[in-house]
Length: 467
Image (cartoon, rainbow, N blue to C red; front, side, top):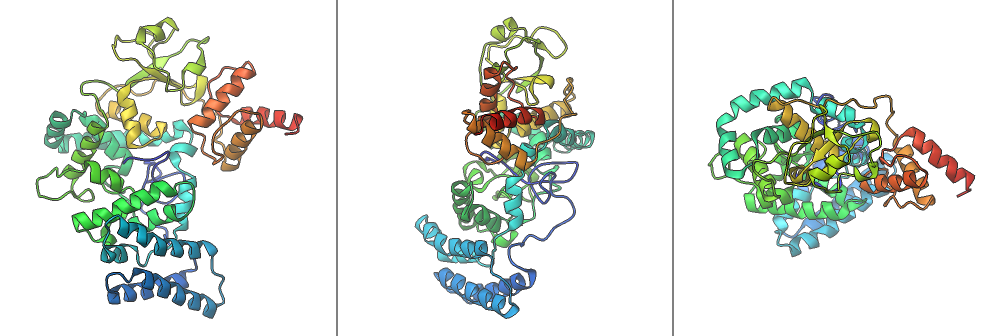
């Protein structure tokens, strides 16, 4: 799945990722209601009316359908003396207005009416969009579940069951089997949790308002193209809250770019065909530049006097230069020889493990643009293949920051003149770069790891300066 700065919903308490309900875990067996915008009774009445109108509508009647839908919904609200949420009105207007955009992109009126009628603003999608586990859970907690013994054992069983298929894919695309299995495991727990959301409702909810409208509009058009080209029934296209679908959670635009028929039946079915899903993921990773017979990276040990501002995951240096700075392998031995330059990533700052990463790590990031996710895929892949897991310890005593605290972190850094980028509660690369600048300016090790202690220091300085 190609993600923007962000990614998918939850799977189960043991398998965090992108398919379902709670903001901190992934979609499990419980299926919470997905239409939370207006009261349930009104939603039910509106949905029935929508279905009747779609059956009766001729091509090109989508605008009239939405108008009638809102008319009857307003009457239902009036009869029940219930307030109309203005966000629902804005959502309905978006669905009506977006039709012209879709038709201009070659979508037929019939496809648009079939896919977009009967959908509603989904408040669960809006909530999950603000609380993605890759960005809000402590990295150690995320990895505990993403690389759990159960997940490893299941991956090793799948390696046996899918051996012939994986051998073919390795030969054709050059992507190791353990990476494909790990993506599969991290995305949907090997197909157990592929998502329960209406794909069009999820994308439209993201598209009508908020920080990801451009991304969601692009994916919504791609989803409509998918229906039109593949002759799919929109009702059968279940997805994560972020609009990713199938066994390996591809976005619609990625499907159009990279999906392949892996089982030779003439179709590209990422929901039900494991060969199609694995082949499509291999195709996507290969097209994004996966280097055959090259690793993703490995764990390293940094010296106490290491200049931590270099460990931002972006600074590329030859292995010889990292060696001169005192970097060693996790077991204390010299770094393995490698002609490829690497970058160092310290997801929990100077008190947690460090990792030397190479170009293939960046390829995994293109599949889902969250470094915690990419690390989970690479580490789980190592464990499935029988290699060692992470040796270093995590600063587990550090408490995760709440959304309000994350927003306060960003706002306080901005007030002190250290630009964190958009104030959105996501402590991504921009925030960590700003924090490193703050730490250097105050004589601290510049590891860019946000903690409650640092937040207290920054807020105190803001108050003292009356900013």
